Length: 227
Image (cartoon, rainbow, N blue to C red; front, side):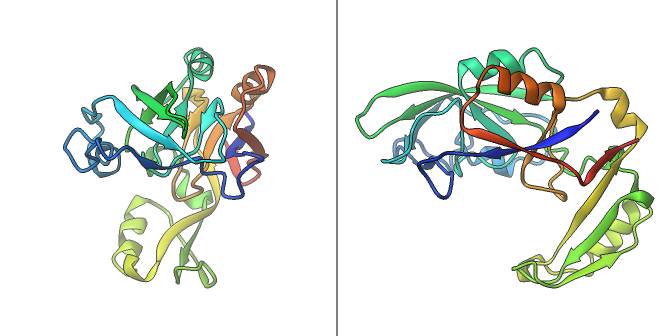
């Protein structure tokens, strides 16, 4: 199956981030606040209460898929139209949370936060000998060192040699996914070592385009191969 990167896209904003803040009435640090999306460490889902209110930037427009920095990186902020489409496809373990977006005029719109689990490395799906790994040696990603990785144990070995405080990280330049992944026939995933973008199947991309889902664009995932 062919895959694509899902990119946030809005014509009215250079950063493509439409939501940077929340209502002060929502305690983000509470155990049921939105920071739980970024801090939980299990495959279970946090018990976050209704998310209100996400404040739309003054010059931003409502889209079917919205970009926000407030809810972590393992989910999507979507409206009912987009949710209906996603519900027809093969998604990873996930949970929907009700979210509310408020614009500068005080109007409120219902959305959903699609949260996927924290199995971020997707280690069981990676063919390590055929996947190309490197170490970012600095926070700007200017200096890169190619590394040989034959198993998840090698990742752990290299992890002990790097300093995240200096921006050092182990990343993937080209991913080869194994037959176990192929059998899942999954339509939406994220491999954080590879990209911050969501990866979508061709059939999900086609469904989004047919429905004219706004707020997103697609880029060919040329650095992903499935055995």
